[in-house]
Image 1 (cartoon, rainbow, N blue to C red):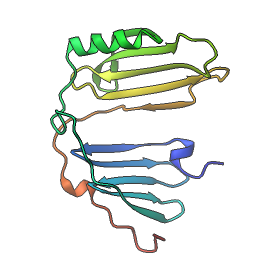
Image 2 (spheres, helix red, strand yellow; image 1 turned 90 degrees about the vertical axis):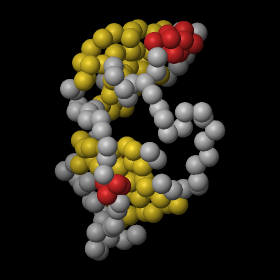
Image 3 (tube, rainbow, N blue to C red; image 1 turned 120 degrees about the vertical axis):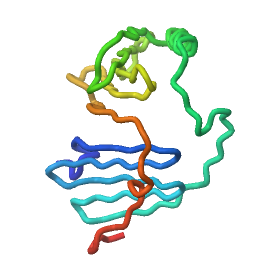
Length: 173
């Protein structure tokens, strides 16, 4: 039996802000947290009371809009879909609702035969372009082999304290 929600599934929350990330997943088998604050990444497994601290390399971005991301324009979306259609059958984007947000659904399936991947399906937030759902289906497998979704998205400033982490007493680091 999988020992934590990264393997067996669970529900949780996440925060993202300028190179910082916090993901909390809860399940009956123990909670898991991933916390990135700049170049430090923590992985905490509450079920086994273990934590790992990784020092990440410094980011080097040459992308012109690094740190100033804006939702894609209609022209950028159309151009991306045209490129995808060279190798994938594309369905959508179709207006929908995901969680508490207006969204666009899109589905992809490979044009070439012989792939183990049956399809990718997802939804993106209509206002921000943030992915809200992803389902990956494999050939010969009933139901998605990977499914992730956001059921409630709040967009706004995140307090810096959300990204700090100190292992609980008794944790093996």
